[in-house]
Length: 147
Image (cartoon, rainbow, N blue to C red):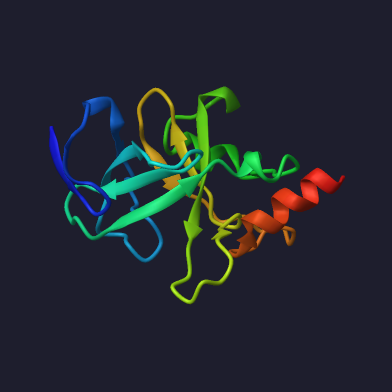
């Protein structure tokens, strides 16, 4: 399938790259179909809307810079996307790169959870006060190395 992307223009994608968010993402509830693409720079990914070329998010695995990260959400929420065991879940954080040159941050309060098998996903809201919407990725990496 061919998808118009914000980062790469039109690209061919495999059906297995398609991710459905039945409830959409916060602020983008009407957009439910995306594809997951490797970014040019690892360890990042693009979550590209299939419907609107300009809607795309940069994602990162939060465990790469926060080994103590915990996604504590109820089994009922996981069951909504068919996850009944933790190894079936892929976890991503949405990355923000400010136009003013400020630090690149990751949203650890609103992780994306994707079922590896069905490729259904949802955005959760964590209530743990350790996780907020703007974790400085580079500062977190430096702090982890210092430990």
